[in-house]
Length: 299
Length: 299
Image (cartoon, rainbow over all chains, first blue to last red; front, side):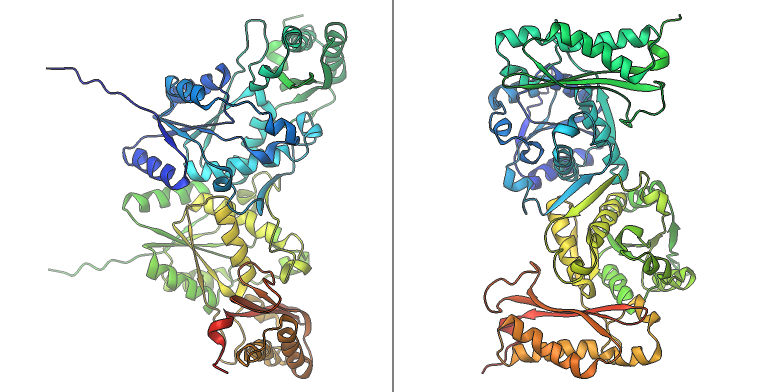
């Protein structure tokens, strides 16, 4: 008797109706749906989300949609890199069973007539320099969540502020969805994977490893017993002052996570050390999260 | 053999988890869910929605939740009438199978951290005097839609602007929900049913029949061939000037429906004539909708 080889070819879907039919079929088979929203130009960070989804959900759906409403800068939107052929291949290899590729007019049938507004966690970190960015993210996710109706969604901790805000939205709007966050995936030199890394010139790319090293300096300060928020920020800043020549620091901050506030006068509980650095054609972000109590070595 | 009598006792549910379990059971039986959101103090208008839902859906869920975020006036919120015992009886009689009675902290677990913002259709009619009202309505509905996940939702045309805005939200956020609007239910003298009618004193109650008669005057003008928006408004205003002594007109307007704009220089297509009138302890609204072409009698 011949062995039956089951090939699971990834389907590409462009309309909400078609996506709903696909999802309905999966649910009729009793399968759980894991969803990974992306803007494409996939890298190992995205693939780690797909793989996590494939491990923990029966059926993995990914979307590629460069969402115009989350860009503050028209040039950044227009320059956002894309390579659909490559993305589709990588997604399929990583276990994605349906790739959702909707058009803008499908996602926004009545333009910006109705949006989601986030009133907390947006006045810090990236929210400061990107007004409306997280409203755009939340709005497109509300749409995608309703089209795909996943059981679980997967977000990378690279965008830690985004993950915290998506968690707030899921809670506020009672989406029956489990949020699963996955660790940052890094290049061998420590640079956090990002689609925007492709826009660094060779000298900038070489220097960019400094971002994560600066955050490690902040972490080292906490390990050494430092609990003053500003002093921890200063330890990161000092590192960048010495080692960053091409990049310009936009922010460095230490906050409690996921509230994104400084909870007390000194650091305790779960925290994030986060930074944004501007290069000539790319704005990079990075962060480390931990718990004050667990990173400390006994004095 | 004894005849099996199936009694369908209405269940009262207070938590999202319990509601989800109820809905899951219904869906496993292949039943469609019809949902009627209300703020309670039920009248024939609500009951007409329940009955329509019972006709067109297998399982009718109603909610009673006096939503704080849609009140502009704290006193109006606090004075909103309620009678849960009576409501529960009426709902059950009208075919409701599950009554959702959530607490405020359940509906708003993180306060107003995440809301829906409506950017169109809100600068006219009730939107003018009730800033943020429709954002509050849309926000609570997004929550309820995600908890109940109905196939159909039922709204009364008494709140025609609300129905138009809910339709926009359903489209924008891709809720897989059918919106069914039901005609205004009126008292024998023409007064549109409203929970707020209970706050009229006897003299005001008697006069309030004038509201719908004024709208009929506007309709008569259209029937007579009038197509100028302002002239139609004026025909309603003239009627109120003569017949309204106790009530104070907040607005009278004629717009295309459901866009809630004046589509051209003169009236064509579907329209709404709408008004709001203030009495000592109640603000009443009313409207008529029609199609310019169909209401006209041949000249």
